[in-house]
Structure formats: C-alpha cells, structure tokens
Amino acid sequence: PQISVDLQSLSFGDVPVGSDSLRDLWIQNTGGSPLLVTGFVTPAGYSVLSTLPLVVYSGSNTRERVIVQFSPAVEQEYGGSILIANNSSHSSYSVQVHGFGVSPSSVDANSREIPSDFYLGQNFPNPFNPKTTMRYGVPHSAFVNVEVFDALGRSVATLFSGIVQPGIHTLTWDGSGSSTGMYFIRMKTGDRVVLRKMMLMK
Image (cartoon, rainbow, N blue to C red; front, side, top):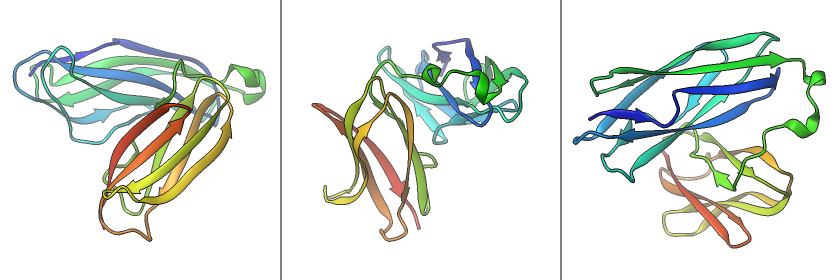
C-alpha cells in the first residue's frame, strides 16, 4: 500500500474560542494492497473524526474522507502536524495544520463556516453504545429531514425535521432503546438524499 493525501496542509484561519471548524481530508491508496490507517496523532486543539481502523483500497477512484476538527480553547495560535499511522512505507505520514483561536466577539456572526454543498458526515464514534454524534452541512437555508432507520428500513427516530440556516450542524442519537445491529442515518433535503451506515453494539 502507498498513502496519498489530497492536501499537505490545512489552514483554519480565525476561529472563535468555544467554536469548531471542520476541514475535509481525502486519503487515497496508490499502491496495490489495502491501506490500513490505524490512528491519528493530533496537536493541541485539533481532532480527527473517523472510525478506526480505516481501510483504503487501491484504485484511482477510491478514497476515504476524514474530517479534521479545530476547536480552540483559548485565544492563541495553534499549529503542528497530524500524524497518520498506517501500514505503508510512510508509516507516520504527516499533514500540517494551522489556526488561531480568537475572541468570539471579534468575529462577525455571518463569517461562520458555510459548506459549498450539502453533506452528511460519518457518525462518531462508530461502532457506538449508546450515543453517537453526526454533523451535517447546508450551503443555504433549506428544509432538512434527518432520520435513523434500522436494517429493515423501518424509521427508528427523527433527529431533525425543519428549516435550517447555512452552516455546520450537529445531531446526537441515543440508541438506548434500540437493539444491537446496523442502522442508517438518512439526510433528505429536496431531491437530495444521503445515507450513512452505523453500528450500535451493546
């Protein structure tokens, strides 16, 4: 296997203390055998939202998305490298990250992160017991419905249904009343439908 990442550095700019900013990283395998990502070592203020281990199969059209989250706790500069532990020759592949934690009052409310398209991120953690969190993004005000379905296609819970403003939003599902098994998160807006698998293990 041979690891390849679409970006060598991620700049988050100014982020208000107490807020989160998200950036996507796409991992590709340019080798022959499957690439196994076993961990992420992150500097202070950063985290990676991904289910581990992450398997990336070879192929020019095959890649896996991970989300890097910047969450400044104080007003200061945050930098460093995220190390991606994997089974390729670059066993500790690194990506540079940089951002500033700033006072919430110094950032205009309209400058919050707006995604370029609708998306539904993978839930985290996954597998989970009993709670899991997922993020979704909308580029403009829209009616959004987010539901959880079981493996037979039956609706288990409606996490959100209504008009949302542009930006990144977070939802949590508590599966305490559900049994172990595979579930699906479905985000529907207009004619757009996105599905994600998740595993509840008790």
